[in-house]
Length: 151
Image (cartoon, rainbow, N blue to C red; front, side, top):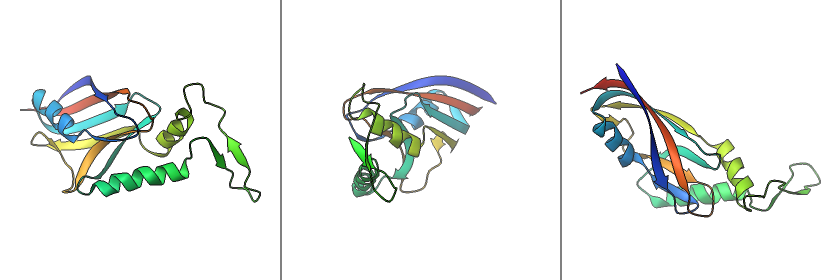
């Protein structure tokens, strides 16, 4: 068994999803791994990692819209009987920052994936996504830790 630690850099284009499956499989191949475990960690507090459908783009659109509906941008209504409107206190990095932190807390910042024959083991319609929660383009770093057998 061998292991390596590295980082992968991605440029996002605002709120939405980037399919990083190919990049991850290429990373495994370039480092000559055959089988093992790939651990991914986002080094940011306003984006997520997720596995979801890669066939119908409406799935990703619906996920984005649903998340926007449960995490509004400027304020939210309390769940108490009087439904008080509460404004976010954290806004120094932009109006989209606090909602992005909430979305990240509701999703994943780490994934652990098995791979065999140099490829991540996913279902037929699955892909690995970096989910950007901020409005603007961002540079995102994903920490990669591979433990496995080399070719």
